[in-house]
Image (cartoon, rainbow, N blue to C red):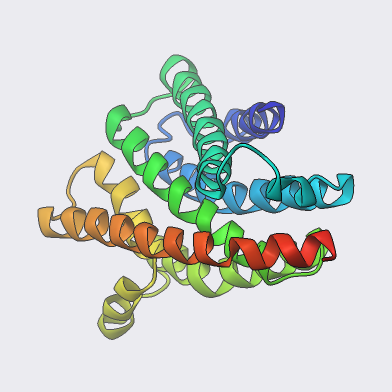
Length: 221
């Protein structure tokens, strides 16, 4: 939780030094980067910390189920992202100009954080330490997030590429955030919501299924 607040204050500082009064177009990008990258980083950080402390092996005799364990970590991430969003939005509303639907941002942030927390589990399962996990996250961000950001700022204008981007999860994530400013077609919003919900359900099953293998491997049994 403390890390989330520190990150939020860092984003506020960046917005403070931004030479713009109206930051309506900037806030969705900030929330997008935070909800995707921080969700993955925090999962990896906590799970590798537990590995070092030897907590992983106790999961086999713990009264909580693996579903509860996974959901608890996701919930912590979602709360952290909500705190970041509230602080950023409050700062923008008081000291800058912003014209975004807060509850739209809130709903989008929850969906994006939930989905990318599960991505964080997958990356953690397939890396040997936190540094390795960070490298994998950077690869994910470069492959899946960078093209979406480039399209948003107008550097990608090819219609075929724009259509292909709908296949990757970062595109629906970005659409939901951009929709809070209005002007996004309704079918794109519904597509993005359904995409992230279905993808999250599928990923949760995969994370749940592979959790035992990870716990056994990390406990050294």
